Every structure is written in structure tokens, then in C-alpha cells.
Image (cartoon, one colour):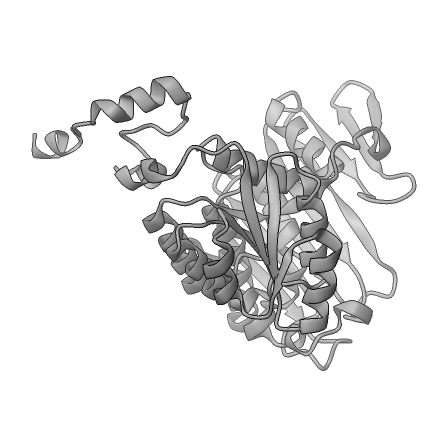
Length: 379
């Protein structure tokens, strides 16, 4: 009886009135995490979100350029330790430029912050924003360690602000269609998913000293393949165990494997295989999903001839061209989802827990490579 009684909450009539008049999506009994959080209601009702950007590198610039095209967002400030870089981007997007993100947050007082610094710094910036009551969009991977992921989730949870992770492949045409076809059940239950993403060593604008260090980048499995890990989890659900092998063959200045094969067993009973490489002279990106009543193959996700072949036992097959799946530009789409989730007072489509799951799977894979054995989840 005590357990049942503890679930009963008195709700201020004003809160219920807000639910009715503002059509808010938050359940006043069960806010995020299943806990009663009256501070969630302290945020002002907004029709537009003021946004600041931390990190003006390659992805930071893409996010900024996408943000300024959104009707319900206004990019007011950008920051980066590189004065020339931030000055240039600030001028291009008509935003105030800062070289100290803490000073920017205090001066600009944005409603939300886009975090696009290297991933080993994500937790520090996210927590600083959350402590100021600012919603956070963090670029992928969420972080390098599970402790950092947990601190980001806890800070945003405590502040009652949204945290969304930029697993942008969920908004690419082929990725989304694969997931939708499997989720529809028309091919039966997924039993095996295989994905490969192969490329060469870091070079050009992507070659940075921090990218060669596992402790700062999370290695190829997080810097690159967190997309594929999230994709496979998006399609097949949570992972129960991981077994991996790998080695360093070409990118010898990195302290992590540059070619990895990861075997996954999902909680559903399905199995999966991810091949990630930064030691392949001939690149490739594709995969397949086998289901109990059919299956689909997507040997090329991007580029000429890309698309999905869908087949069923005892029936024919059809090809869905990737150029027929083109929708809103994916980076813009993910930012729009973030902005709308804040304005509509609901959880974002890709939560901190989703971002953490990808980090956990990659962490388990590296542990398996070291030990040679299976690693069960959760860690």
C-alpha cells in the first residue's frame, strides 16, 4: 500500500489549466524519466527559440547554416576558441561571435545550445548549458565515456531541459526507409542485420591530432560508426551482447583499431554484424536485413544506383531508388525536430538515452577486442 500511495501526486490546478489552454504534451504526473518534476513548468511558453552554437568546425558550420533556415529558431551567437574561425562564421550567419563559450552563454542567454565541439568536451559544455536552464542539442557521438553520458543526462534531467543527440542518419532517406519497412511488420520479424561502412584513413579537413586518440575521439566506432550502431539499434532494438575483433593496420598513428568487425545479439533474439574500417582503399557503405517473411538489401546507401531491393518468400522483388526517398535536408530535419520538441514541450525523437546506448555498444566492442570474449549489456 505504501508503494501505491507514493505514486499519488497532488497537482496544482494551475498546472492542469496550462495543460488545457496551452495543449502541452508533458504529463504532469509523469515527466521525463517517470519522475514528478514541477520545474518543467517554469519554462516560458515560446513560439521561437533563440539558439547559440559552441564549436565552429566542419559540423558546427553545417549546423549553423541549417539553423538559420528554420522559421522557429534564431541563431543569436556562436563561439569557438579559434578567433578567425568564429569571426568568419558569425559574420556569415549574422550572429555575435565569442571565443569563450561561458561568456557567450551568460551574455547571449539563449534558450538552447548546439554543442559541436570535439566529443570529449561535450559533457562539459552540455552541463554548463543545462545549469543555466538551456536546452541542448549535442552533435554525435554523445560522448566518449559512459560517465560523461550519464553526467549529461543527469544535468539536463535535473534542469528539466531537453537533450537531443545528433544521430542524423535517422533522417537520411535509405536509413529511414529501411527502418520503416522493418517496423511495418510486412516482412515479418527481423532476424539478421548486416551493415558495412568502409573508408580510408583520416585526411584533409578531418585529420586532427585529437582524432588519433581513443580517449578523445572514441575511435572509429564512435567517431564514424556510432551512426551505424544507432541505425542497427533503430531497426532491431536494444542490444543484449557484443563480441568483436579488430586491429590497427593502416592508420598506425592512431591508438585504436582501424578495422573492426562487431557481432551483435539483440534483445529480440535477432543477430547483427557491423564492419567498420578506416583501412580500406575501396570504400563502401551498405547492408541488408533478413526477416522471417522476406528481406531487403541496400548495397549502396549513397551515390549512383543507391537504393533498397525488397523481396518476399514466394513473391517477387521491387527496387526503391534512393533518389525517390529524398526529403528535407537531414541536418536541417534533425535541428527542426529539436526546436519543435522544445516549443511543443515534449521529448525529442533522439534522446540522451539513445546517444548513451551507442556509446555503450562501442565501449563493449572495444572491451571485447581487448579480452577476446563476449560482453553482455548493460555494462
